[in-house]
Length: 401
Image 1 (cartoon, one colour):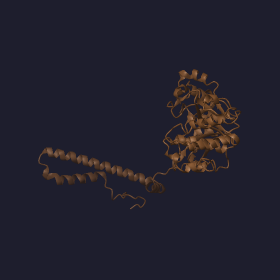
Image 2 (image 1 turned 60 degrees about the vertical axis):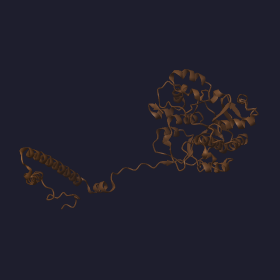
Image 3 (image 1 turned 45 degrees about the horizontal axis):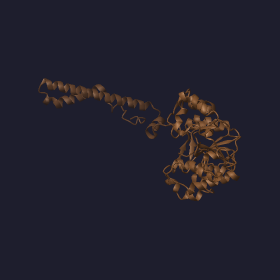
Image 4 (image 1 turned 90 degrees about the vertical axis):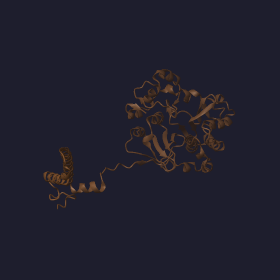
């Protein structure tokens, strides 16, 4: 027997098709002859025999074809086929994003713009940066583009990694002042006014955990480093480099938004950061969506400014001891109830006119349902994207999502 063939490929063991068919037909005929009483039965038996012989021929042909393929395969490949299965080239290991507190390169105090991705927070979870969409990356690029003397740090609230090739991430990292870091919540809160309260676990009983975690992380970040915090749906239209720190913006006549907050890293700004954190845990409500975020700013600034009238706070640094509350047009000219104005071409002229003097626009990503947009859309949003995040636009292809 041929030892290179692990199957029945010896010629003595494989019958030829003609002899096999004749033999099987003879056996059937001898066994069925007592039952062949009339011609009808004879015809039936012949049909059965033909079908049986044909099926046997197909089986043997397939076996021979399989044996030939095996015998024509090199011995090394046979072992791989039967022992280890198909072989695949290993993909490059993903790059792990450094922890912001453990990295040797930290944000320069007061000269950094921060974005925070908090939706990834889960116990033991890991975030893949490929989840960042173009409409999230666009505001990040606009910050790096318009503020070259600032550093831009994008923080992830869980262990995070990136794969080798990610066009949108590559577009962002082409800016030398843009960095990605992860954070560990417990470590990040250490040595801050919120550390002891966080250990009690009240935060994690929240009905709106991702939102309240985001509200908290921006305050911890500004307490630690100062600088500017922006939501990942705040698109910059103009530079912030010449604007003194310590500011936020009125969202309505009676409310101050927390999507844009700036604090000095020391002095009055640092004291404000401490007051914001103290208010967060003293007045925390896990079942109220805005109570711990925007309303927390109003509570603290009401004490600082000597009034709870937001209109009196606007553009009056002297009243608020050096803290500036911008008017509605600066950041929130288009309210969330009118978010569709950003995306309808027929409203483009009106929307661009309304935001002509705005420093930023808040896109309200958490309620927007218009993605993706065509790159050549005549909407106000794509008009801004072409100007303020051109590299992200170029990386997305025909659809901006």
